[in-house]
Length: 206
Image (cartoon, rainbow, N blue to C red; front, top):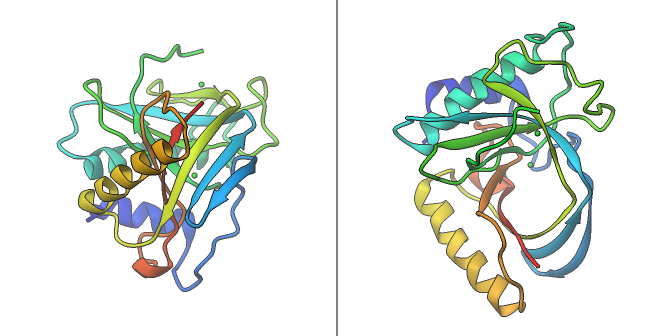
């Protein structure tokens, strides 16, 4: 169950529930192949504002702290005091040692949790506002092919794990090889009804 901070921040970011689909900007991709709720997508490169959370007691706790830092950045806590438009998904994934020079997605790792917001396509590395918080940085995600499983329901660990296991089966059945950690993505406000939520688990493949 998302903590109170995540609920409040999600409300501010995505508005009140009631619509099955959101109309926020997403990272650009083309669908290579589809099989029901399973897709292979080719993503173009895009920018994210990102932060790594260490020492969190759970994925939800990491999400709450990540939302707090990133929401401050897009709300004007940057060198130009620019308010950055919200996009989807909000992403959280396995943390990596990333140089400070790079849909929410999420995965556990020894170092912590990596939480990111996709920046609108109007920004480049040169024009993206510089975060005031040195724990937040801008990263370019290179173009990559992703295997994606879409599902609805609550944001529970059990629901994610269930669909991560299903994703692994579908990747193998499609003759693909996973080349990175599984990422989680959410596209709706925390108050959206579970059966209207668009959730995804995804992994880079070749």
